[in-house]
Image 1 (cartoon, helix red, strand yellow):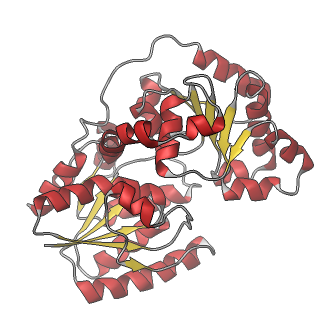
Image 2 (spheres, rainbow, N blue to C red):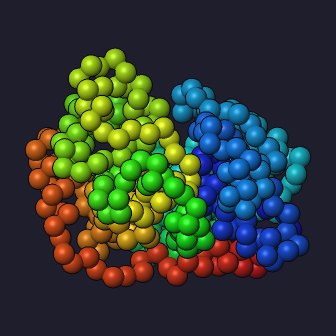
Length: 360
């Protein structure tokens, strides 16, 4: 059996790692990884793949930048050529990047079965490019592997055949179990930054709706700078956020009050999530990662794909519209004493279930 996996960003490689481990353990399966290069990441060296325990991509297309249409079109052409060369039994895609929808569309046109991991997620915000990608991918996939019952319900509402859908749990839970202990043991990021356990906050800001809106970005950075007066606040600075701040003395002044780092390696960011008192983020994936490491998370958005975390009181949606409102909401959320226990994303065996289903 031959499985070809299309990936476009570092978080997708992390999601793919548990399944690569399961494939290797089962044997008899050729595991081909294609990296579109959608997100350039200087940390994705050979060491990165060694740490994850997976092989480096066999194909690297180096397709990043440009408009969504140009990027997706170029990816579609190049992925199709790789599929014709290899003729895999299954094409595997993760999440909601342009690489995801390009891979799924190329395979579907060649009558190659498509398996979509993290199917069924919905923000119901069609202004998000990711929302378009995930909806299209779900509707052209052969097998859909949602991470939660809420995601299953979305697919049912959209009329997708129930026989194609299997709730396997969240593969990021597999990754958290697989790599969490190693991160705690090997990363020295807290020592390097002079941080004490649960005595700092961690933040990440990268989403286009926040970085490209000057008013929202100012509110976010004012909020983070004020929080940093109380205790350290670590911000690994995303290239997009850095670029938006570069020509603004006001924003650069706010950044100077934070503990800034370059984008961090995989184990360092896990360790910070484990040790932080609170995560403040507009990321999708980091919301769940924080939950897996039992760290409350403030979501700087108007909606989230991970509504279960809000229901369990581990996450709170706080749109960055007005600085004092955001600060008050964060302080109130951090004082919450009861956070519910639950396993909305399965039992950390998603990779095995996906592989078994595809092999059947």
